[in-house]
Length: 175
Image 1: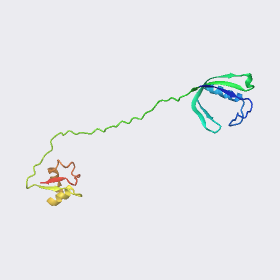
Image 2: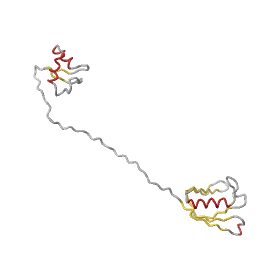
Image 3: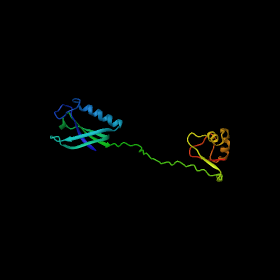
Image 4: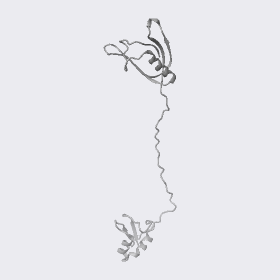
């Protein structure tokens, strides 16, 4: 975009500045610095009517491409500036978040041998383990001596991994 600017060297009623009056030289130096630094800056213009109705608003990042100072006698000591701005757009790498559902592999054990099936005859007894039971306690109940637990263990090796680990609900053959 390009446009002309009048930079007054004298304080006029229409020249209202936020930090007090500044001569044209102040603005020319600022514009030169913006051009040589080639850094983007925020360009804001708000044009209003006397009743405060907004005609248009401009708010964008720009860089100074070029400017030309034109002096005319009709302007007196004021400076006229023709300026050319170029819109600046920030660039960056776009980032995305990708969520990949990972499925946990399920371990499958292949049976190495068939389970041992014991035939239970009518005169063979069974016992269902209750909470607080141990093979020692069960053997003492059936044989009168706890050290006979090895008989129960040997008859139920397919169900008992360790003699000290039995669980409620297990059904043991009592030989």
